[in-house]
Length: 67
Image (cartoon, rainbow, N blue to C red; front, side, top):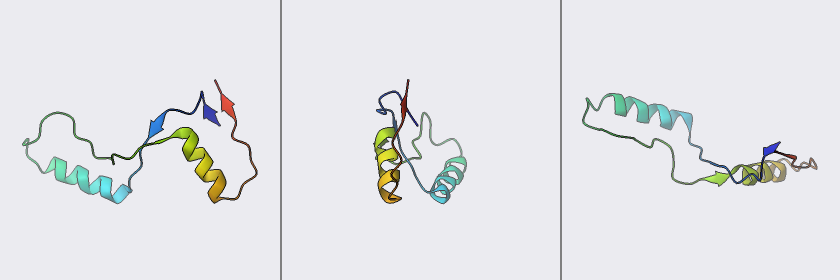
């Protein structure tokens, strides 16, 4: 199920990379201030993610959109 038009975006990263980043951030001893992006800069839409899953699994399932 995709909410709305599916234009919402998300990014993914490997969990071990995220944990390494969090450990390094905690060890920075206050040297960093402000927001820190520990994700990746590449984003995909929720609709694109759903389409990729359908394609990769050779599924015949329709992508259902809900408001």
